[in-house]
Amino acid sequence: MTTLTFAQRRKLKKEAHHLHPLVQVGKAGVNEAVIKSIDEAMSTRELIKIKFVDGKEAKRELSREIAEATASEVVTIIGNVLVLYREKKEEC
Figure 1 (tube, rainbow, N blue to C red):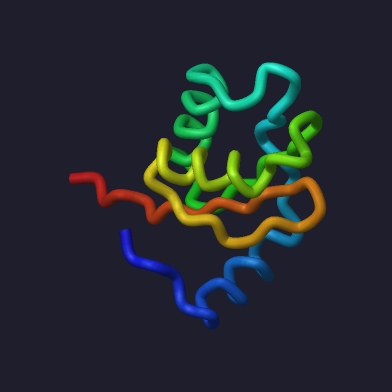
Figure 2: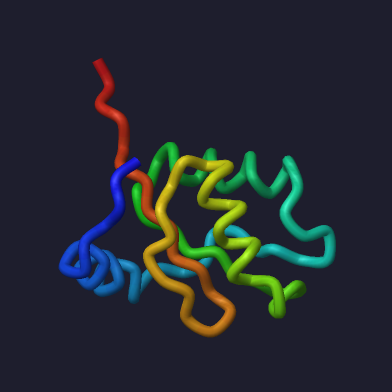
């Protein structure tokens, strides 16, 4: 996966502004079920928001973990919301 440029990040932040969080990370933290639901959401969308309800102190570490597990890029973390991007694969 390539790293996003500043211009790409800025564009993606603008696109993500109106989105609502699709997944919430709660007391259970990041587990297989959370990763699976994020991966499923990213199979239909390139850009998603994830809200940290618990584990707010470790959100940067958890964000990297989520991005690695889903082969996506962290666009930004604003407050307790993570924005992830994964380019949609071309279907044949």
